Amino acid sequence: MRLLTEEESLEQLAREGEEYNVNLSRGGWEDGKPASLPIIDIASWQGDPPPRRSLWGSWLPLHQTTMLTGAGGVGKSLFEQSLFTAIALGLPFLGMETEQRNTLYVTCEDDADELWRRQDAINAALGVERSDLLGKLFLSSMTGELDTALAVETERGTIEATDRWRQLERACCEFDVGLYAFDNATDALAADHNSIHQVAAFVNMLTGLAIRQDGAAMILHHPNKAGDDWLGSVAWHNKVRSRWVIERGDADTDPDLRSIKNPKANYGPTGGAIDFRWFEGAFVRDEDLPDDYAEQLAQSIKVSRENEIFLACLREREKQGEGRLVGPSTGPNYAPSQFEGMAQAKGLKRAVLKRAMDRLYTIGKIESHTYRNTTKGRDVTIIREVPEAPRTYTPNASRTLTPNAPEQSARTPSPTHSIPKGITGAATRAAAPNEAGGDE
View 1 (cartoon, rainbow, N blue to C red):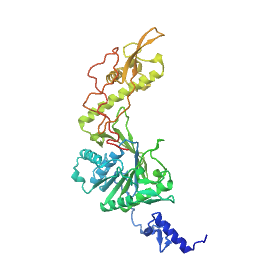
View 2 (view 1 turned 45 degrees about the horizontal axis):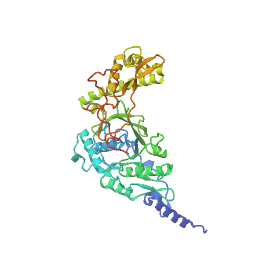
View 3 (view 1 turned 180 degrees about the horizontal axis):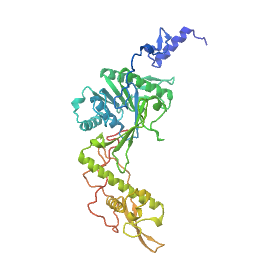
């Protein structure tokens, strides 16, 4: 094989650079030869450095890529559309100020009609009209499209930009976009998500566009099966300068509650958390709820907690064996009396535990069961938990409160325990949607 001359080697490197999507006009090559590194001219630094800027509190740094993760159905897409609406209008969001910038949210998760439905709920929560968003908020749905990838893997193991990426660049330039997001990473990168180099290169692509737009980029991602916050290489975490994760509240006591945390914030404090909840199709803080609803919600959460404490005590006694089972009637094994003082009771008194027991009978969570105790030679009535049916989610509805009566269990409690009438406090209103309207 003939050895290439220096000139031929440089020409080959130039061709390969083009193949790998290296932009030769941006300092990579000069006159067919490799250029020097882009050295910063420190002499040009005069006065104080420019302050760091963020588009939402201190959480969304300018000229960087932020990654948002969370379990499927937790509400990442709704959160993103809500945040982008607030920033497009320069309105505070979940208690933090925003800097007004035109925003572009691209999703491969939801179709145009779902974005419309979701947007109307967001507008209602923020008190704005559709006309307020014109020329400021831009939405794009690629649901059902095959060619969603912004970058693909080459035969050489690198990545290169696609026509879809060039469409994104053009849209950001045409609409003067200062914040863009792509939902989600699986659709955006058609390459090896476990490759440190490929993931790092892709995040660099996103950040480069953010810098050129004097704005910020966001990428939505999914957790892996092992429970990590993101799927794939650690480069997803290392390359972004800010990372957020949304978590769901307790499914039994407060299913509409959410919390967003920032476990990584290179340019600000980490470990922050903001609590919010799903309400009428949007995300709001408790302090922004209508007064009457907030009062009902607080009561509902309180009694749901009491219900769960009673069940925790019941499960503990069942684990301890037959001799530790409790009953519904006053006497030595009366459940509220036996539970009072248990660690699982968390300080609740007998009267409160009795109210919880009555509610749980009413909503079919517990039942009385009579069996023959051969040791004692008599029938014994105990309380046992009713197995829970598989949880199903009703789209576009909350589960915390509802004007309707709670659905009764198909199993009827034994007549050995009378059920008081008018018991309140059951968790009501159908379940918050699987992502408040569909996610993943």
